[in-house]
Length: 195
Image (cartoon, rainbow, N blue to C red; front, side, top):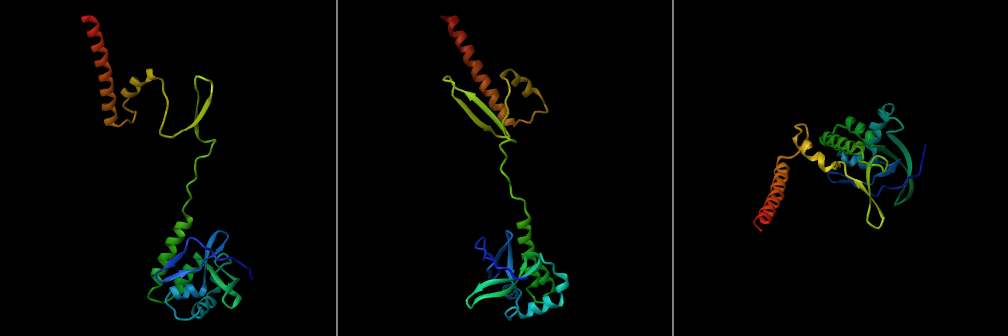
């Protein structure tokens, strides 16, 4: 079955000295048979791989290869293309010195394609802090996952809790701040008593 497709513009795929004119099909890169052949070290224009494909066509599924119409310098022509899985299978049948490197390269690309795309947290799954200023204006801000809120009275108990994960340097910083504040209060009392 023939289908018209567009050339994928980004990201470019390149194996050693071959840069592929990848075809975008359902959001995934597909490669032209003659370019796969060049990457595998064959000299022909798709003939060697066409022969390999013909011998093993039963092992390829529709999700691995397709015959499509693509624009060329001589006009639109039917071209056999392969998904990355199909290209890997061609590499398995190839008997060239570079075939093993090509197979590893294809698997690396497949790993990148299969890697989950990190999703930003949804608005519903986030925590939000709503505050009101003295004029009654409302401000809403997201609360980052590493932040939490507590009453100031809860701080000493939290610091004493051995299960509370807090950096030792931060504990020392809190102690210094407490000592500074306590020193300031004691100095103020001493000054009032001496006056």
